Length: 126
Image (cartoon, rainbow, N blue to C red; front, side, top):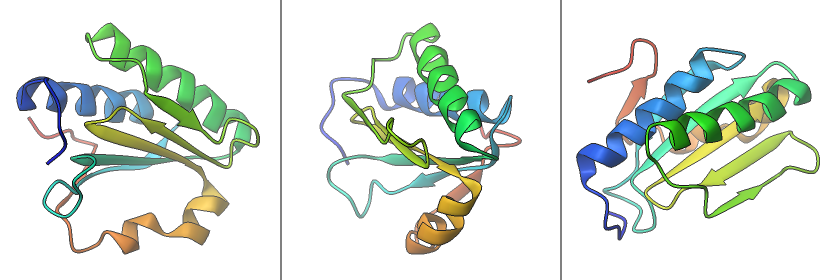
């Protein structure tokens, strides 16, 4: 479990806000993976795909705004803004991975973390 001063329920709200923002468009195949039992540095991954680099850029902005609106933090760092093939948004308690379709297929993070509990973001769990 990651080190945080935020309550787990509040963090879960931020995770759901990120996933919902992705699913509202133009993201697809959004999943939430609970990695807290195997990683010390974070509790959840939100993984989503955009059909192209323009969509990945839009998703990055949309997710950051959605987390902010629900009272969440700004990302500690954002990587991948140069080419928008794989953008990683590190919020500490959770990490958002936004892939172009081809990059998601190539890197297969979903398969890498297949032993961890995975939730589809649509419909979002409570």
